[in-house]
Length: 282
View (cartoon, rainbow, N blue to C red):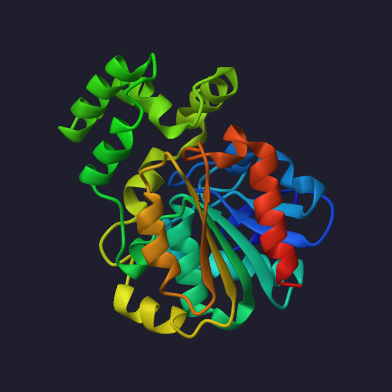
């Protein structure tokens, strides 16, 4: 298992799979080990995936200072990762909460980004995020699902402030396009793969500077793909569209019938979409 040192000395691990040009992959959660990404639905057949375990997750070491879990404090970890791999510019893929980390990286190191693929990525770094109303809107579309009643009741309790594991477990189907055996097995790994202390600190006060980041990405010399699941709420496709519009070369692609993990819902469509985007950048 390869490792490298972050600027503060924390040892960070990463996992490599596949063949082809390198694609640096940042996991979401926030602060979930990269194992949940798998090989991104077979994307490893087209690209060599470098999957980073963020500090304190997976096989990476726990930092001496918990304050370094904050999103902006991890930007230089990504830069150290790039330098360790000896790449001048990178193709970067970020999922979910890692969208913020990728955006903060692009704002601080714009010349190092060749392409950015944000898969259902959050954009608090640009002052845009999903809301409870967005969650409800997306949830309402699943009313015909056999699991809907129990899942929606749990969702209501979560919106009211419940942090019970049982409620989050019951609401899990909303995050998948199909609540089949693959999705259920994937959902069962979330708790053990997530550093809850780090997750609580990831977006803490000071993590984002939207005005600064917007000014930089408005002139970013990189192609950007916002890939949104049609059934996802974080962000809704129309919200992802507003993010794409902030980039000179931003585009939105909505994957039909997909939730928060589109590489599980339709692996072939996901890999074809991402591969086509990356290949056009060459």
